[in-house]
Amino acid sequence: MKQSEINNLSAADLQAQLVQLKKTYNDLKMAHAISPIENPLQLRSLRRSIARIATEITKRELQ
Image 1 (tube, one colour):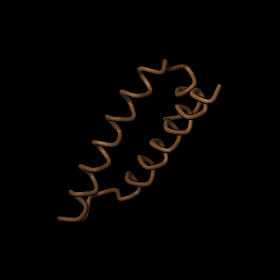
Image 2: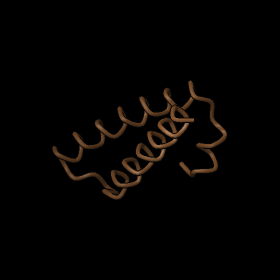
Image 3: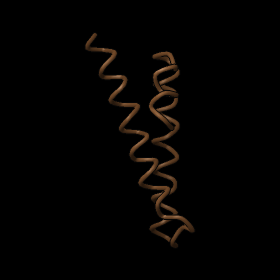
């Protein structure tokens, strides 16, 4: 998810997206531990998207 897309979301949408991405990340991580997934770079992109959303949530709370 790009930063421009994150900026357009509301606070509730950000929280929902964060929960969804964390669940997807954990599912992929477990699948990768059992047998290698086709594209392991998905893990990195999901982790970075989670960090972007968490950063935006924190930034909005501090304003």
